[in-house]
Amino acid sequence: MFDLTKIISAEPSTASVAPEFLEDLFNSIPLGIFAVDEDLMITAVNDAALDALEIPRRRAVGKPCCDVFRGVTCRDGCALRQTMKSGEPIANLRTKIKDSLGRFIPVFLSTSVFRDKDGDVVGGVVTLQNLNREKIPEMEFGSSRPFQDIVTGDPSMKQLFEVLPTISRSDTSVLVVGETGTGKNLLAKTIHKLSARASGPFVTVNCAALPESLLESELFGYKAGAFTGAVRDKPGRFAAAQGGTLFLDEIGDIPLDMQVKLLRVLQDKIFERLGDQRSIACDIRFITATHRNLEEMVAQGTFRRDLYYRINVLNVEIPPLRNRKGDIPLLVDRFVGKFSRSGKKHVTGVTSSALEILMKHNYPGNVRELENIIEHAWVMCKDHVIDVEHLPRGLRLMGSGAGPDNRVGFPQVEGAFIHQVLERNGWHRENAARELGIHRTTLQRKIRKLGLVSPHIDGRSVTR
Image 1 (cartoon, rainbow, N blue to C red):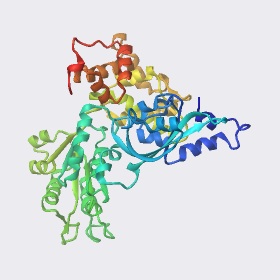
Image 2 (cartoon, one colour; image 1 turned 90 degrees about the horizontal axis):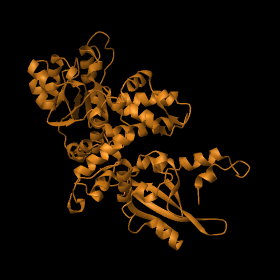
Image 3 (tube, rainbow, N blue to C red; image 1 turned 135 degrees about the horizontal axis):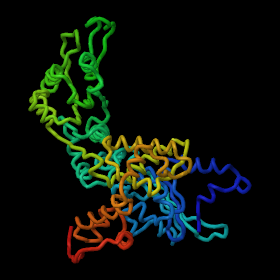
């Protein structure tokens, strides 16, 4: 069996250069590269390919390449299979592969065979040029890379992704609602990236972090001499965001006096710096966010009704992590990979026992809290896998305090998630497998392994 990792990890006595250099070279190549054996099982893959798919290495090596890359030609007309059969390479075939969330990525694909010292074909090599990293037409770009920072497999989040390009194309104000730590800032950045203002600035102001006196000068700017200590002109955030997007985070914390001034900017599209009588045209797209219930604040008189209607033209709500716990394994993989790519330590994942505790927690701090937990565990981990002992002590105590009847391991979570998808598709295996992003035979194996029992429904007669 051809195994590129054997070349990379060769002993210095049998290699002309250090194995560390070969591995660094392999992973520093910007093109995605993966190798397969004669059975098209992946034997090696570099960082660029993993980054494109947004998966950890352990979910690629040893797996069939068609189950990992899920190209549109994988099942019918596989270029790699053709090359290994004919011995003829294929160069720059334009096609699409799927990432871990089922999003299509346009690529240029090239294939070649790998031969042993006797000239026999023992495997193949594929290079992928990710076109979403190049300058390509906007319609082709729109569905993939802007979402790369948001990891989810949750149906409600996927529905949000479907309408986000439509929301982004408008210059209308957007209100993003969600608990602290759910990723409101990331979503605002994504809207900006998908908009016609993507080449312009994206300016963030945390309204809760600044007192009223400083907030006004930060937003509007000031002329020299406007007040004591104003020794030179300051443009302000409105000026900095011209031609782009201004993201006002935690807008529910703005005092009433400031709400009046902000409303005028939103309505009249002009503003004046402190100490300056000259009005400046405001060419800004406003995105605001809050974890507060603004409707209740309006009823209580602590938030202006007219301002609420002005910022709430388009409303986007991000569900808390406790309502989409199926995303926890995906996020754990993302964060483990993120910290491991720092180069200081290579951690491959978490044990089932550690994941069991992570799945039981309700995360009042949402995704940000989970990231902090994984960072703590990554620092404390001495081997290559995060275990229970590496988790924060408070989390371990809460996990151990639950009775045996309340224990929910990864197989149970995976089983519940797959059962929901099957029910949603009327137990039609092929449709369910397509939604899950796996092959039908893989789904069948999981159904048997997890002991899922179908109702008396003939799934073949159900159409999606």
